[in-house]
Each structure stands twice: as C-alpha cells, then as structure tokens.
Image 1 (tube, rainbow, N blue to C red):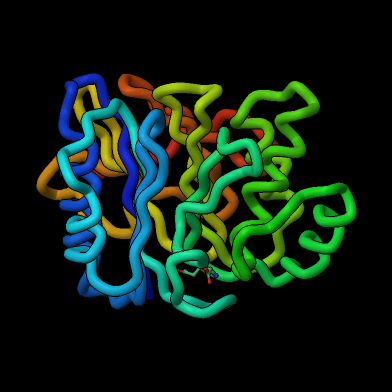
Image 2 (cartoon, helix red, strand yellow):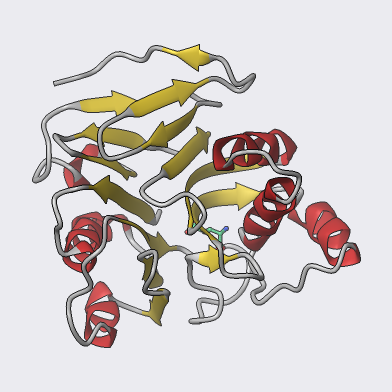
Length: 235
Ligand code: GLU
C-alpha cells in the first residue's frame, strides 16, 4: 500500500527524526523503498527498510519542514533512482506521491518535448515537472499544484515542498487516503492517523479533490476549483 508523512513546524525539532518516526509507523502498510527530503539538506533515498534510510543519515538533520515516503512501486523497478521524493530539474520543487497517474505517458511526452529531463521511470516524476512548469508562469506553489492536479488522471495523495516557499507544505488527494494532523506551532500530513497519534489528537480528513496549504500555524483547504472550504476537525 505504501505511505506519505510530512510536517512543517517552528519548534526546532530534529526533522529527520520526526520523518523517520512517521515512516516507521506506516511500515505495516507494506513498501519496497523509502526516502525523505528536508529543505536545505537535499534528498535521501534507499531501497528496502526504513532502517536502511536511517543508516544513510549520518547525523540528525534539523529543519522546519520535510516530506517522506514509503514506495510500493507501480511504475519503474524498486530502485533508489525510482524512490521518492522526486525533484524538479533545478532542485527547487520536491514531491512524494502515493497512487497511480494514469495519463503519465501523455504528460511525460509533452514535458520531454518542452525540454524536461526525467531521472526516473516513475509516473510520479511527471507531477514535479508539471508543477515546475506552472511555477515558471509566476503563480504561487499552491496554484501550480492546483493546476497540475487538474491535469492528472488517476489516484493520488501528494506532498509538495519548494525551496522558494520555505515552511509551506502543499498537499492534495484524489482516490488515495490522506489526513492532516493539527498541532501547536506545527502541522502534519500522513496516509493514516496511526502515524500521527504520537504528535496530535486533532485531525482533518481531506475529501476527494481537496488541496491544502499547511504552514507552521495555519491550514487552509481548497476545493478543486480553488475555493476555500471548511472541513470538520475530528478529535
Ligand atoms: N506510482 C508511483 C511509483 O511507482 C507511486 C507508488 C506508491 O504509491 O508508492 O513510484
């Protein structure tokens, strides 16, 4: 099944530890590789257990946000190159994704035609290059993700960060599970609440087609058309 875990926070936590703990609590879902990205520190990816990923992180990485992923390969072998997070060509935008992008071949052909160079065999990598292309038109990260989602066919739960929007975490879901955990001075996303109960007791479940923008002290949720919407908080 695989999983996503991400957070943005102002508490000066050890980001790599928060992300590795989150991934460990999702391990029961099954996966073949793992990875994480903390802005300012690059990505770390490994095949096999979360313990292998942990072994690659020589000393704890502090940071105010990060995204992490357990992959269950659907497009491309379970290799380090295909493990998430995937990045834009300039290394500014990083994405984790659970699900399948059905129209990835059409998107990939279009993006390659425009000069985008793919590093992996995954369907996921189309998402990050498409976000980058929209960002180049001058829109916000949130709007670039919204416009990208409008082009995606299939199922997805995604987590997106950009070095150009520090402390901001964008997420969206369609057909794949995703829950937001509301903290104090920090907010989280995960594939299920089991990964979040150690961090918070307050959750928001996104509906299909929802997008959300998380900062350390705010969560704003939007529908597919980009209109601000309210979703209930569950305790
Ligand atoms: N389809 C993506 C891949 O093969 C995501 C798989 C997943 O849900 O982990 O990389």
